[in-house]
Length: 160
Image 1 (cartoon, rainbow, N blue to C red):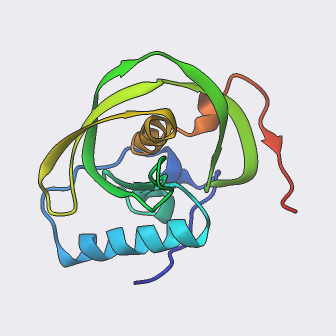
Image 2: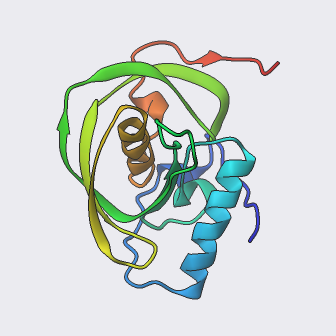
């Protein structure tokens, strides 16, 4: 496993559309492992393949279990958002735009279909932070950044 370089806003790859993954390969397995390691190393809750320079329809998320606070990693390959409900505006950030946050409206509930790390299809219904993360990371696969959807100013938050 290895930590990969996270591409930052201004890098053209973040504005491109990603291609579907047709089969699981050792390289894709390694990419998934590296993405989790990179995300955890940077204290993120989600990371999409374009953020590490790979134009594949893949993202990883770990918002933790809301009840136990234990890690709850998810792998989404070729995700498709099937349904959404409601809307909540909350502050959002991104590992590709470090230190900056802005209010972004997102669905409060989503239903998504994707393939897991073994290329097995699953459907997941999510709400709250997990729903927000799914929508945010899915946008990355289409070259969309949260600042494109922000409803207020993007503010810099200095780390203490």
